Length: 332
Image (tube, rainbow, N blue to C red):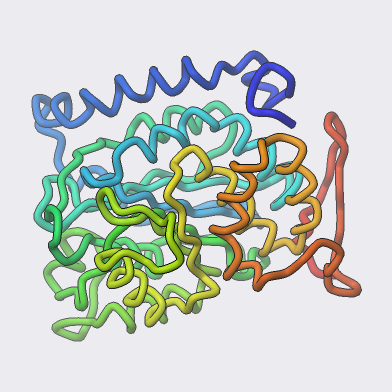
C-alpha cells in the first residue's frame, strides 16, 4: 500500500493527493493564528468541558504545535486517508474514532486545544480547526503544556469500559512542566483538583491508569540523531520522559515524513501486529525510510524480530477491500 496513486485510501478520498493536501494544510497553518487573533477566538472555547465517544477502539493524538515543531502536524494532515484506512482495517477496528489535540505553552494564547472524536472526512475539519500558534518558550528553555493536556485527558474524556486502555500518542520535542497548579488546571484543562499543585509524575500516572501512553519525540531544534549518542538538549528531554513514561514508551524520530509510519508502529505494538506492520512498510518504503522507522521503534518494539508474535494472540488480517467487524485488540 504505497503513499501515492497506487493504493486506495479511505473511501471518502479515493483520489487523495498527498502533495495537494500538504499544501492546503500548510496554507491553513500559516494563517490560522492570525485569523484566530483577528476573530478574537477565546482559548476557553477550544477546550470543551468534556469529550465523549461510543467507540470501543478510540485513539487520542496530541501534537505539540509550538514553533520548534515545524511542519509535523502538516504531515499528519496530508496522510489522513491513509491513517484512517490502516487504523480501521488493520490496527483498531471498524468503529475506531480519533481525537486530535494541539499542545502549546501555558504562556501562549492557546495552550491547549481539544477536538472531539471523529473519523472519515470529518477528520479534515477536526485538524483544520486547530490553531497553529507556533509559540512556545523558545530555544534552550524548559517545557511545554504536555501535563496540562494529560490532566484534561485523564479527567475529561469519556469512552466505554469495553475500550480498555486506549492508545494515547503525544508528539513533541520538549519536557512537560514539573508541576501544574490549581489555576492552570482549571483555566487551561477545565479540571478541578483539591491539591494546590500536582507533579508531572502524578498527572501522567493518572493518565496511564486510563490509557496506553506513548511519546513520539522529535529532536530539539536542529539537533540530529545521526550519531549513536543523543545531542545534549535532546538527551535532557529524553531522560526526563524516560523518568515519566519509561524508555519502551518513547519513539525518537527526526524525520516528520515518517511520523504516520511510527504511529502505525505504535498501534502494531498495541494490537500485536508487528509482523503485518513490517510487511506493509517494507513493501511501501525504500530501505532508508524503513531503517529510520525501525530505529525509531526499536525500544518500543523491544528489539522484536519478525515471527515473534505471542502464541494465542489475535492476528486478524483483512485484505484491501474486505471488512472486519472487530479489532485485533479484542480479547477472546
